[in-house]
Length: 171
Length: 282
Image 1 (cartoon, rainbow over the protein chains, first blue to last red):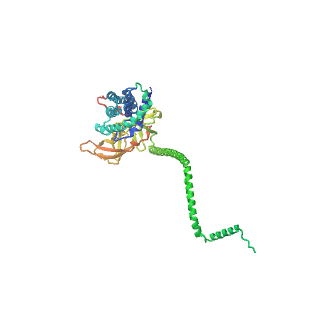
Image 2: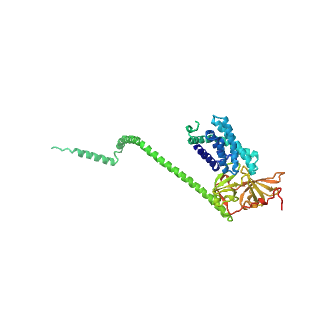
Image 3: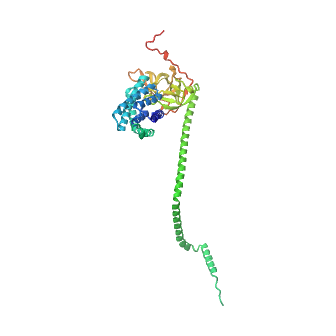
């Protein structure tokens, strides 16, 4: 139970911080995606309590509350990242940093690409793909990769505090 | 006859008196200088050594006292720095409020409510802000939002304690505007980069950099004559139907903290009046 409350608090805080602060840290038009980073670090660190898609669902729901896109869009965007995490977690078991960076890289491309598609499809925004790629998607991916390790360090501390290693079920 | 010798104390007293008189008269100065120099040197040395020993003995107490005092002063400095930061924040807020008040005074035809920007859309593709006023405060979808400098956007969604505002820089934003002084009407469009441009500007329209762009009021979404920005550049392409006009927004969107919501403006929904393909006319 504690791990669910801890995860919800952590991801909720990440979405609030993203809306209040992090979304203004721009490079070109890209900004770090803190909910994605926290989610990636959390599912990398905490493998036993719940599947990755569960936490992706939580982030997507919270993200949808803050975004102008329809709430279901957040679920779709992060569900894709959740599927990616499920696939990667089966193949990459031990080195957490490899999984983390693959999740952040692939997840960033997936979520930003899907968001771009949904913004065009649902909101009718005429954004040229090249502009989106150069101004938003690639800067966001790079910023996410740069911020992945510091975020992982914080999330790992939080995970150890919420669920000490000797209390992890199955260990 | 026996001569009585003088008492020794009298002899000494006479000698001392004589020496004093000689000294006061300045006759013994060389002797005093000669004698006093080693005495003073010795005295200085004694004082120096005694002071050093005393300082050595007192040092631990002094260091503790200094450390304690240093901690007190550091705490005081931290407190004062916090106060200074808070006061600077208040001064900045006051100047913002004053600017908003100036705007409200300059446009007395509207009623305003001041709102604080508390969030932005988490996606970089969308240019939306979240303000701390909602339906409990009388905010309704469609209400225009302005800053002290000019137009900000429009309320698009409301919950009891907050509202979402679409900025005019959003890629989906369209605002009917007028360029002054030529009175040319055009459509202001946002973009994912936050740049503003004018669409539907005829090639023969006279528009120059520096011209003002204000809301036209057409379409019923915004009240007329709210400053939007200034023309930055114009470009006429050979085979294009319209000019390309870039606009510098008046509002600094990157540093938006306080906004005014125009609460007495009722937007008009003209969507039913727009003919759709396949619709039959009675």
